[in-house]
Image (cartoon, rainbow, N blue to C red; front, side, top):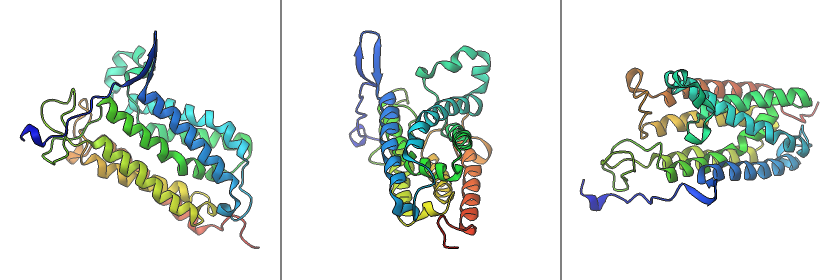
Length: 276
């Protein structure tokens, strides 16, 4: 491909601010901002009785207390998932690197399991419906995911497969060939598009049926991830797996099945505040 047809990679410094030994990176800012905006959005959802058909089955203060649990679930689950699913032989040989989060390496599917565990434990301890808490969490999650994928792009990581599309880019560390900016695809499809779908469902009354919003999220993300994996370069330590599938695709299949099961279960049960 002639170089003139390749969009230059912006080469944004991954460190936003550095004061002495302290460095604030775009990736950390994405996590912080995503958690903050998601928390505020969740509070608004819980406080809006119209979305629930009556009082929500939890209080705003419940979600305030849950934010820390959710954050730990994302970080611990995401890291453990990456270690187990994507690079176990390396970490088995270098176990001290498991806690070195600043070197990168997080798994969405591991983070999902971590958040589900946090939801179940917190809901059980607080005496609130786990499915409804999961619905609220799922409804706001794509905000953070969108910001996280933008941070991946700024870091010049998780680039796409080689291509000749006019918007291809040559990524630092990705070799001389132009590639899909797959991080932007994922930010758009797994982030903004999925968020729009969930907003439509929530406004249409999905929260009145516990588990429905969570099911739509799990199914929608799984489908979106499989689609985006068609353009993303597989992790080099794994490459392509069975039949040209990637690890991201394989992990998304049970996520879709779980989502469909949640949707089926939600639709067959009586909604919240149903007249007796």
